[in-house]
Image (cartoon, rainbow over all chains, first blue to last red; front, side):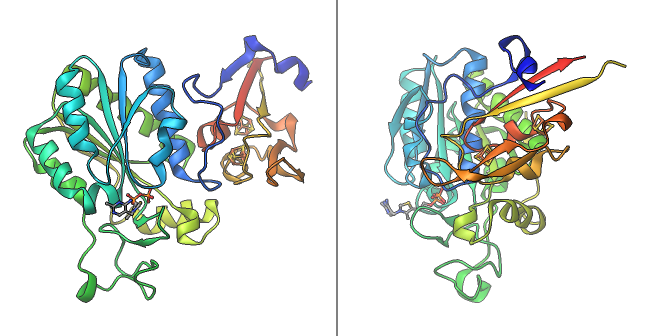
Length: 252
Length: 74
Ligand SMILES: Cc1ncc(C[n+]2csc(CCOP(=O)(O)OP(=O)(O)O)c2C)c(N)n1
Ligand code: SF4
Ligand code: SF4
């Protein structure tokens, strides 16, 4: 029975041709892979594979250039928006995007992020917020929730000691230079489809030179959180979404 | 009403056995195998192929792009 269905003319979904055959180094179930898939699909659908420059972060996604078959530059930790600024100013007709974690974008790179957005650089920023430093062993980041455990706050984030979690996308939405700021997720098939539409809009804005677009993906880091992938996505729904509410923060 | 039937192909080499597709499938089609791939991961397969409706939920959730989805109207 299946043999009759599995035929080229019946194919309804396969991964983008821009996703290379390398096995991704991410932990099983990591949301980074899902976001990579959507970025590759959007670039392929736009037909921009020969006119796209990505800027990879320091963090788990440092090797994104091994997985998506477009040009990439590697930035020092947090500096992706500065590199992307130069890339886009020198190549105004290229699609330029950064890919950054919460440590990269909102801690060490907060300055570059704020100023690139304030200048309204015509770039798209894909911001994967998993609330910890995944790559280096699950340390607390600016977006770690109150009470959430991380390796540098093993009893949970304490506001007295560590301050409050930062909703940096809300701050970025306040800046004149941003044209589109949205918060999405990839924890369900429906959410993945919506996140893809948001990435498409951000990339279209870069090409239309409308200003800076920020797509925050509220994500899980199941091994950092010490949960199974499925439970991490459930935890995300129950604990992250009430604080990091999904939806558009700005669209003009 | 035309009946829709689907089927999926899992890229065993790329699968990491994360089980997200198993939970995402609305028709309980998928399960993890008893066998493991070269990297030692139990991989996803169609345990209940007759139930597949070709909705591609599994393929959309898979972080590693392992799943191809096919669909026919009968
Ligand atoms: C200048 C500098 N400081 C510190 C580090 C160490 N370091 C590597 S990755 C990382 C944090 C990454 O966390 P995040 O941006 O949240 O990304 P994730 O790994 O969670 O995707 C740090 C602090 C570095 N590589 N360079
Ligand atoms: S295509 Fe839909 S019904 Fe078929 S296995 Fe995937 S999720 Fe289940
Ligand atoms: S979601 Fe992908 S990697 Fe995870 S078990 Fe299913 S096919 Fe394998």
